[in-house]
Length: 486
Ligand code: SIN
Image (cartoon, rainbow, N blue to C red):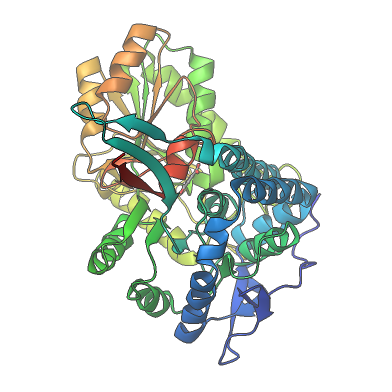
């Protein structure tokens, strides 16, 4: 069990070319514990030159890493999986301290993140046994199709899952034979630095993984993106930032994976098992305090069970224990920072001012720390901003619907298409509705779809490409076709 804000991990410098080095100008960034609002560590704050040095290191070993036998790469990934599991508590403690989620959730994230290394270790082992060899239909012209790594990759990760988001990018990149520059979010750099240490111990050669933390993201990323040696960017974050990166990627026609914003609908039909639906809605809303792009943002309940669902869901949220993530019994930790909390509170205040009913919560909890009350809203008017925007906090808007068509129309009435959830005991309806929802992922009778073995990603403005599953590896591969005239 964690004991609170202690830093027993001492690598706080940049990881470039297999060395731990300070920023070239000696600058550091504070890492704030959101449960206290206080800095508990300082990490090196990379300059643009540091970022380019990391890219140089990645490019210098790209060919050698691509030529490393896939089985050898798989073994390194397998040892990384084990290394993370062996240091489960250390990772969980860092995640609690820099991100704020409760201890049990942090441990779950460690398993989730480690799972990507296991999954892609298994994939890497089979890599070069895949491909095609065939003959063109009208002649004896032979066609060989194989896969090759896309090349040096820039990986940009958010603060909400400090280990899992890095793991979901680094593991497939290494499996495919790509070298990497990982830039974690400034709020949660320590977990990525610990991951670099584990990767190094697992035998990742110098330069294959580089980690740069910076408070000057725009400049550093812009400089790297401007360099035509970078062949891939994988980004998890907001849709507005994704648009900027896509425009930058266009300059060098770079391969992109974009996991962007979501506005997930969760639909509960009259025939749903109510306990299952309540449990699923709780998980889909409260996992990570709602600070997730797959969080249920719009809960649609059919009119026959709306009153009962709303009553029980509100009771459950009102009973939540809010507190520091490392305290036993905490269900909901702090939000990441004051800015995020203010954004969420503005959405609630706007909805209530326009006529919404707040059944529980709705207030900032006095500090220290960035806590927000778990909140349930109903009767939300058509002009409330919360109907349109990603919430990223512990606020559950509940809407009532009558027909299946209405539920589908509402669910699809957003520019986003990441996750969605459907609760019903009618299998035909479940599949029909899942098929009709324009989203990359639909959970049927479950409030969690994230899994290393499954392709995570969205449609519309929720992004491009998939992470995890077999698609997650393909995202770091190019198709090579060799024509053979015998
Ligand atoms: C995210 O919120 O960005 C990812 C959540 C997940 O992987 O479950």
